[in-house]
Image (cartoon, rainbow, N blue to C red; front, side):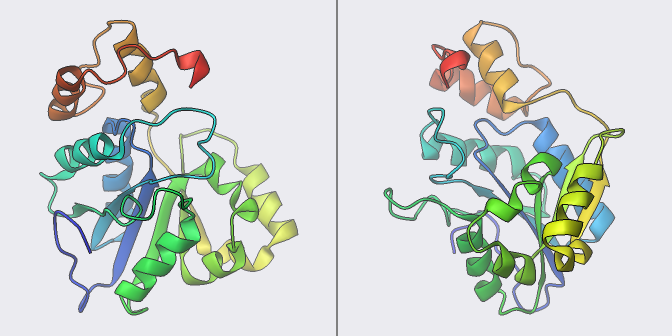
Length: 221
């Protein structure tokens, strides 16, 4: 298992899995992960940069090594955070499905840990369209992260009708709004604008030094 920090697989009680393209990772991701860790008493949060996500075909994603390195740089100072290369090391012609990732970590921890998959509320609304979603909901709980005041009635109604047995495993956590997104950062870099205080300093420097996002047309990606 390729992590920049090693998990304790023997005495671990609960683990958060935070997937995403992280193109780039930003302070909103880190704030979310830390707040979830505290609120749910997680032993650790594992960031899992996506390899070939099925829902990102509409835009070009940066090279996986850039995304991996930025995620490591952003998380390395937090002893509770680690980064996995699991999805990045899958064959390039294989799509990265959440169920495959969760199965992998479920096997790694021998079913002894409580697994939580951390995602935005909008994404969790789509779970019922995900591959093998019933198995997914049976071996992993979900934390739907949202900003205060964001309506979540649709989420509750969707699961109450289509998959009521999943409701106990879906938790909602409101986190103070941070108007930062990877899309915004890419656009600002392309426009020559500052991204200071939007991404960790090391990540911001890496983006500039590597020339990432400089020529992107956000309307086409």
